[in-house]
Image (cartoon, rainbow, N blue to C red; front, side, top):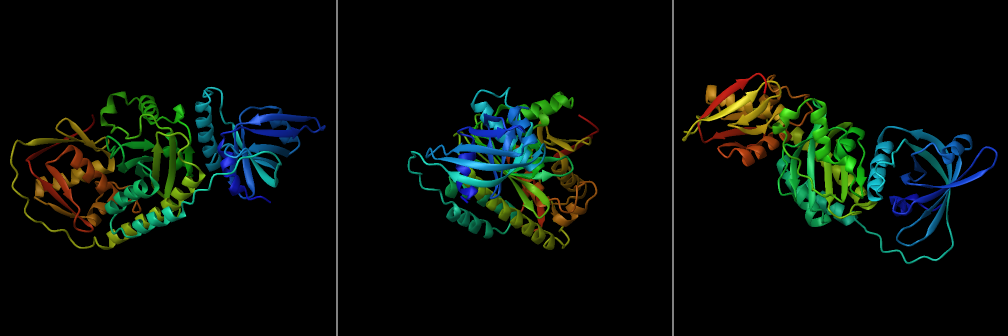
Length: 446
């Protein structure tokens, strides 16, 4: 049988497929289907959007014939299918739902196209039909590019270096100019941005809730989510605003760090970063060009994300091993200038430097502990181990990546507070550098 993976270009939804079914009494029916979706070498899925005659027929007689057309060559293929089941949640459903949203937006049918379920079929046979066709363009081979990116990842010896090298390699090797890495906050079921490239603002510290946009859906379903056309319902600005308003948080939007995504994104791809069963975060890329990311790009980034998850876990284990020694108590340097107020709100550990919002959550608890010990005890050096075990920080679990929080905090301070700095040159340790007097103020709620 023809390999299904060789026909994935046909299943991008560029050209609608035609599906033929029969009722229990043998009456035939032919209709169009929005998606013929590749699942694996033995299965495909069709989008279930309406309770149509097609739907009635496959429930009564679980066989279907689908005609698909390769949009690049015009070659037609007939798929002989056997209906197995309908999925209304999970990775397959979420992937097809996002893809349908992009197709609907492109066709001006956003209010009409709605996925009710993903109908899973076993592929019994695929036949190439005779007819006129144009030569197929040469297939892209991204394996050398994946290898080059993997080699650069393997040379990294600390997390900050790993993140920077990854984004640099994506740009120079895969020509992906807009990308970011987000890590998971298991306590709040959100992701926070730790690294980005190609944007006017970095968006470091911006948060995306599980289920919001392609990033949040990829995290929740732990599956790659790819949009080849912009889809309004996957807009991050809208998602963040609606979530805040639903929770009565309209007055708290000043603590939301703006997301760094493109204003007009034509293509989006989000890939989960995992280590074993643990979700570490999401690798997200986008482009202003429609249909920029295809199946081969998805395959490449899934492979890269797999190695990234492995590398992050190894670096975290090395960090923990190096953080067993006690921190020094060097005398703090002399500060000059007017004292600056640092305000902490206990409700969510949000930190303000003067009137300027810095960070909240676990990262906020970390910087407050550092500044409090600096002010009360004159301490400037801290180990990762003591920060991980400090109950006031309330790190969600031992497997949570403390190093990522420190990178987030270091980069936010560089952007918003030049007179307070974190030196990460010592492995497994943090050195706090303060250039102006500080006045710490603690509040119960904003």
